[in-house]
Image (cartoon, rainbow, N blue to C red; front, side, top):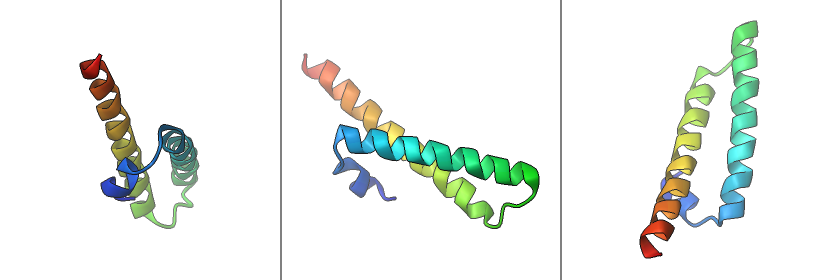
Length: 68
């Protein structure tokens, strides 16, 4: 997921995507521990997507505080 796509999402969409990605990351960690992880790059991309979403959420929160 690219940062431009993430910035166009609403807050509720961001939270939904964040929840889904965290669940996916949990499943990937479980598969890794069982030795059944087929694509290690999926683990990396999920972590990066989570970081991008959290970055946008924090940017929006800071912008709200600055405007108040």
